[in-house]
Image (cartoon, rainbow, N blue to C red):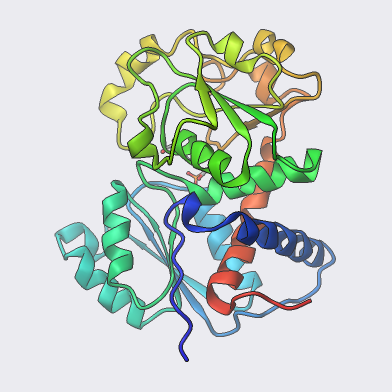
Length: 308
Ligand code: CP
Ligand code: NVA
């Protein structure tokens, strides 16, 4: 019997048990990679990567990851494919999924990736939409576990915009049972429906960012203006001015608090250089772990659970 297609369009598409499995596979795959052991479970498989927005980490980690698993990756973007000339997303999904084994998409509205997935014969992975960035948070949580052990019951402080990365942290808190303290400027608050949340049990909103950071085990932020929202940049620079993660904010967090940022970062805007380049920061491990978690994810979506 054919295996049912599993897509990864938002964080809560996978269960807690599946994440426990994936984090253990990530550990094993990373360990093998560091020991230069060849591992080609996806030999002859093809990943198609569709980018409607810019990327460094996502492109690199998916392309390198697929090659390291024995497969190959093809890059398409809106500028030089028919996608940018109005071909319906449903038609593109039919064609692309007949020629490949897995598709990764970075696009604008979540609805676009959902329409693609509904017409795809192969698994579709969200490489960032306006609403979510699940691969990023999978890497972030793996990084937390690597550094500090279990995330269950811990407190994550989100300082800044309630964007795609924030929404995904909030979903992750529901799936993996931790808490998020969110502080956004007025007018940029969390929209629970857009974030795809079941309730409000796993997060609390704080008007004062210092209060959100107080005692937190992890402090994290992101750019004030996400891709696709550039027209709002000037206004956002003013509105977010008091939401910079700086040394004072890290000092009120837990003593051994970590600092994360999905990158790219703007030093002097959402984060002070002393924080991102300082002792609490794990941003380079966080970026590297995109490679390892996504290899575990592609292996799982294409082959199911690997025994042993
Ligand atoms: N964090 C992240 O997704 O980076 P890129 O935009 O470079 O892919
Ligand atoms: N929130 C950012 C994340 C970039 C990786 C954006 O969407 O531009």
